[in-house]
Amino acid sequence: MTSDGQLILSLEDVEVPSPGPDEVVVRVEASPINPSDLGLLIGPADMAQAQVSGTPDNPVVSAPIPPALLPSQSDRFDMSLPAGNEGAGVVVEAGSGAAAQALLGKTVAAIAREMYAQYRLVKVGQCLVLHEGTTSREGASCFVNPLTVLGMVETMRMEGHTALVHTAAASNLGQMLQKVCNDEAIDLVNVVRRPEHVALLRGIGARYVCDTSTDTFEDDLVEALIETGATLAFDATGGGPLANQLLNCMEIAAKTKDPGFNRYGSNVHKQVYIYGGLDTSPTVLHRSYGLAWGLGGWLLTPFLERVGPEAAEHLRQRVADEVTTTFASDYAREISLAEALDLDNIAVYNRRATGEKYLINPNKDLA
Image (cartoon, rainbow, N blue to C red; front, side):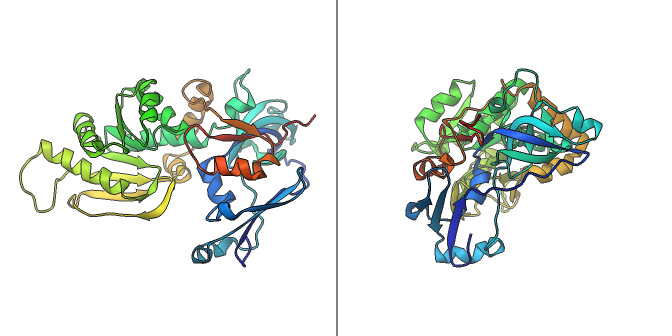
């Protein structure tokens, strides 16, 4: 991103360093385009005005940054920022250490950033060995979505809640969360935006699904909150009035169990964590739900640091064990690095819509 207000997306040839004793080189075969990746890759750029130059094999995309948003991006001006938080592939070179040598030839998933690359040098500790027969495509999304799901459930337990609310619930992540909640008998209230999303979640065992597009959304949400007792929500949208609606409906549900006047609202603590930004508008709150509430941000990395390395490794191993079942991901299309800079493809994956998740294979069509 340039200081004069342009986002530039391009491919770059770089040397892959030789691995140190505790490092390996992974031939990357699959890396998903997650919303968190798009925050870096696209950011606030106006892609409706994007233009492409260069060649089909080496395209260059440029798009303007709205002037009002440019100051917020000053920390990244004129910096080259490789993208791709996670991915999977085959270890083709290993350092001299025993742990590194043990990975040679293995298919691994890695959370190492800069994974939109044909080859990536990573630390051994950033790798998760996939079970025999698991493909790179199947293991590409081993970290961000699955560990976020497990982190939500563990946060619920750590903070004394007994049920959950999740927005943008028809996403890959939302479907994983429903499956985990099915397995662990946890009540989950799903919030979606379309009738077809309701049907999708019902098909995998969801009992509570509330559609924001209906006139009865808030009534349906209150009823689900009364039945489940959910007082913790994870909101993927971030902006707009949804967090406020969640808190308000939680308060209404709490008052049905403890009626009567209280000038400070119910004593039941209601918590909403924003963990995404699908809606980039301001978060709007109308504080009509007393004082026993909280609104904060939630990120995976601080959560993993909070629970410690032993617990984090246990969660990682569960993902590896269930990557083709509970934590399976679906992709609308597999594209190459050059195809990731095609304006038509950008228009699709930048919508961040359910059912339109893209997968980059940096070595697609290469021998």
